Image (cartoon, rainbow, N blue to C red; front, side, top):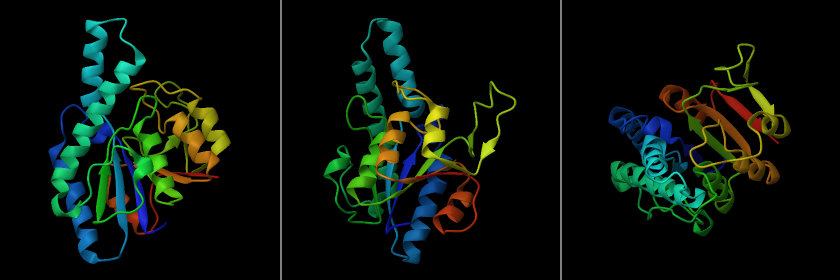
Length: 230
């Protein structure tokens, strides 16, 4: 991986129902330990909306059944930025740069970490992360969610679904489809997947709650997850 490791941190593990303070604390401690080790690797993290987004989007739909998709997207963007701001506050001096709200404007990481949230309607945080990686000239990305691997189908509905260690972009796009809507829960946003495929990115999907596994991944050691390859 390049000098900057780009991470899409799923909101579902940061705010599954409410902010998972113990998880965020352990996550920050791991980052701080890596920074102290001085291996030169920096992190660029984009945080998802999680329950923060879903709670407010559901409320908006309940209050106005005709609410527009753009309005729902704006609610989700605001939620991701609240979550990202919380993580940035937790990181303290490790994060010297301003909160990233436009991934295309970022060219470098000043401190040890930069943190961002949503960008604009029609762009999930997975998609924002792909654009951020492109801006930072990184061709490797880590997508952290609450699933350990990508399956051949949804294991909740298909008992024959099997986990994949590696998958090529065309096959992955067949699994996730080609449409994204606000609040959609997939291993990796289909629109972001198409963009990542077009620019030849390598994306690793793993369970972000398993921090020892994430540590192994960051260290280039064996890990549990799925690598999507060009």
